[in-house]
Image 1 (tube, rainbow, N blue to C red):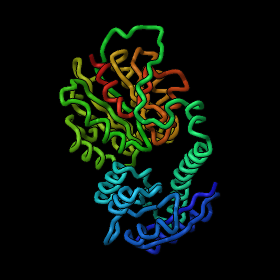
Image 2 (cartoon, helix red, strand yellow):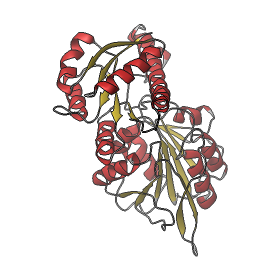
Image 3 (cartoon, one colour):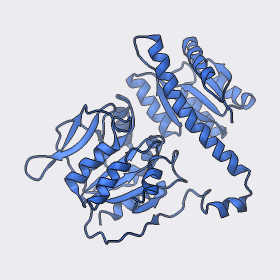
Image 4 (spheres, rainbow, N blue to C red):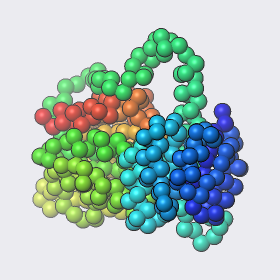
Length: 364
């Protein structure tokens, strides 16, 4: 299947470099390049792209406004945001992801053109390969009669399916004292829906790994903090862990929980190597939560590509922790939760809309 792509960027340099890269990728057809947001919106009906690479910062109609127009007009197109590595760019990108953009690529700042091209080729290639697989699945589903879909996979087209308990050989006797969340592609939008449902007096800390580069994680923390009753902040090395706070791992760093003075816990932000090509990594966080909280912990694995979190979940599960996985129907990418579910490590498989309730159940 060939993906049709439209490139939207106000600079001729990036329109050219992205087109040159896309022309080297298999099963990709660039159907148009435009230099402003208004023209992009006008061209969508005639060019009928599957995907748009959308510059965040443009004069006139910027990337966020284009995304809002796409939603309002109900265009069936997937958006990849292309952002500058600035505070303004990161803030706008986080808003775009919360509005439903599929993913983003930060404009590279390597000293060499070759390095920049290699980075963009790798980043865009991974995202487009994932989008292509999703389009292939959708195409196959459209070819199956509706009764066939139901028979093939009950609840496939429903996003409000109930949580599914998984039979376990033991009864969990104690409530959680900490929540750890691992999430990736589709994360900002999912978190913006789930975290505001949690009460201000949850009385436990929440540790959160969202795969994201430096600077963008700080923007995400600020955005979520405005939406949530809980306090949301980017974690700082050495700070004491407090209840009713969501500690978001800094992009480009690893985050773990460690013992502090007395019975207290503290945050450790390190420059340890990536795991699963991720930094921060859910596995890295989950292992520390298992060590520090044991059976008094809940791990939540949500939408995202790859299998980061599976090994950490297995350690937490062995320590008696409780595991919640997001279901396939509500995941933008069913990679990370699928790895956990397929390994038989999940206690509950829940749609996005039910995850907050399932977390609260582990605290009672």
